[in-house]
Length: 607
Image 1 (cartoon, helix red, strand yellow):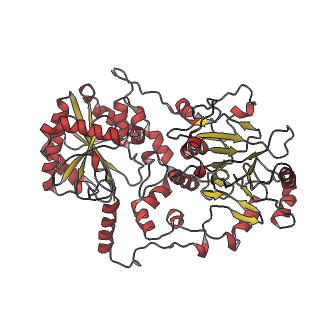
Image 2 (image 1 turned 90 degrees about the vertical axis):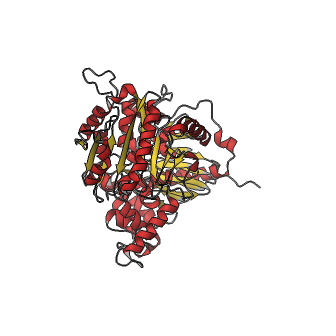
Image 3 (image 1 turned 180 degrees about the vertical axis):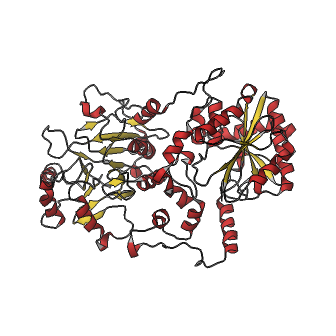
């Protein structure tokens, strides 16, 4: 016998009108119910003190909530008072994502999270955007980071709840019969748009705008299912706009592939892809005499501003908990290997991130740094950590995670591999076989082998009328070294130095020329003389042998994908700056590897 589908009611801004709302819920339960739960988006608490007594009746137990009710709008008059008291209840201590019970049948969805409701996967972002890291009634960057980490977990999110509308949700839709409020940007949040684009929920519900709007389904990038967005009006509004809506969706986990892939005839493109094209495409920089005006399309100075301030100081939950983050240079949070190491030693993430933990004694994690109290010595810890990395490292040939089908050639100290998500065809990496964080820490006697590979690749690409650019990004405790090798047309070679200097200027620094006399034989030695294990650095070897170096200041926010972004700008390929946009199937990778080996064979130092 098939499991009955859950029946869910959703409503917009309650504004403290709980009597009106629950009277309507009870009426619907009698006529078309029963319903399993009520989800409230938008402002839950009243705008003025006039509604406090009505809310207090429920929170203090004088009135009963008829069905399990969940709300996200944790702001308004009385919100701080009622929710602060609820947070201190013993039953609400610890880490809870399925709601803090504020009274029987009423649950506050605090911050952000994901939980299962009658088989449905529900994700939420509570409150409005907050400029204060601990501001009440608003979400912060930690909440956003946690949702982005959840978005990368397997499985489809059925319902996504936010207070504010996603910015630009109407783009690509038929707005001929909509009200002006739908296209008005007020009450919309671009961060919600970004999250909706990443989470790809089947349904997205929001309040705040005070109008009802049901958008046509839209397709998602890299996903087979569609998303339906619904904006709900204020409870008991005078304009008779729809404020309550019922659904009975089958959980995605119980649907067949055919059902998941079903696409209504009125399905549109994703509004957020259209919004991105309209708002984020930057005009190319134009300089007098440039043969091509689109060398530098990515303004990294803007990225630097975005990553600065309080946002940039917070830890990335995804990186800290797993050791990797697919957002790379686009991540607004700090990727800290030391914090990652502490997290693996059972230290509380909130303690690492904020210096405090609000979960109290129920928190199962440690609230002090695992240094002196560790059960083994620093040497043992380093050795043990190295072992763990080798087992999970994507580049160690002994690791089960290594994609060995990408390996093109291997010698004793280095191997050559096709880059994952290559910027251009034949974009390759030179990787130490030993687990080593950067090539400058490799023994000097291995440099001869590295130079053999670099020379062979240069000759191979020169036969194709191409020059080669080598670059490496080095930072403390980086996982495994890889020297990027990007072939470019001969016509672009003379502009490489200028475009890197232009990018540096945008970020506010100047490159140091390591070998002004093009003494290529001493390049590695000179780089080692500049290297400090406690600092980060980026260097690029230009066609002709000149090496540009930048030692990154401790407080400087340097883009992780700087080298690739500059090269993407040079080659007029801004859409390929992110490697994730360039991923191909394993079948295509195998074909690319086979073709490269055929051409490179006569130059391969390993042959």
